[in-house]
Amino acid sequence: MRAVVITSYGGVDGIGVLEVESPPTPMADRVRVRVHAAGLNRADILQRRGSYPAPPGYPQNIPGLEFAGEVDAIGDAVGAWKIGDRVFGIIAGGAQAELVVVPESNLARTPAVLDWVQAGAMPETFITAHDALFTRAGLHMGERVLVHAATSGVGTAAIQLGHASGATVYGTSRTADKLQRIRDLNLGLDASIAVGDSPAKFAEAVRNWTAGAGVDVILDLIGGNYFSANLDALASRGRLICVGTMAGAKSEIDIGLPLRKRLTIIGTMLRGRSIEEKAEATRLFASSVLPLVSRGAIRPVIDRVYPVDEIREAHERMESNLSFGKIVLTFG
Image (tube, rainbow, N blue to C red; front, side, top):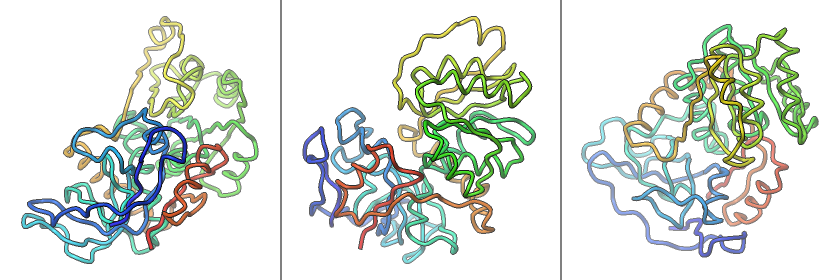
């Protein structure tokens, strides 16, 4: 089979498409999927650079955390799927290949309203956003949520899910033009601010939006110097859910602030979880999110689509920070 392969760590010259050995016929509860589309994520960039290896048991040289395709073969214990079913799902590595083998519990049925590109753009971002906002942070109707990196794949998913739940949704981005595109798409963003290089701006904006009360939940994909401003922007008993560290993994904070406000700080990572934990996240995604997709209430936001042979161009696009929504790879 053909797959995206990391041949050396560093720049885009170290990644390409090669012929590799196909996975064997699945056994027990495993399902082999013929991949038609796979989303590109920041984790793939980090893995190519050598700073984010796949967990044990997954290929170190074939990236990819999400995929959409057709069931190609099933193990003898599989009961939920049959050959030819349209499915999508998450995996800790190896999704950017023509064939991938996963536990049947880590798959969801692809709604008929989604084409392969749209399906390939959804699993990682929407499962991450849903798990972070609702399972981890306990967001509920009537609360206020702030989404950082609002124009990213996870950001656009979180805005839509927050809005669909009845929450008031605020967002940040580094640039005003990207936020205008979010507003033009009518995803459910109630207010937003372009912070540029000054995260303190969003804390002041939150005070103005909420008459000084603060927000109940913050979804943070940035980290770094956003952390202290997050604590300032949270309401009493607010929850900060940390999903990424695009701006760095270290920050200096006033420890007294989370104590006085009785804040909850939650860290989460989808990739390293057990099969059972991923199965539960996938089940909740299928039961809570996919009905909204089928009704047209939420949708993936696609930046660009690249044939898999253009993998280097796709990486360059993501590294440029010009992307808006998801970058998707297709397998012909």
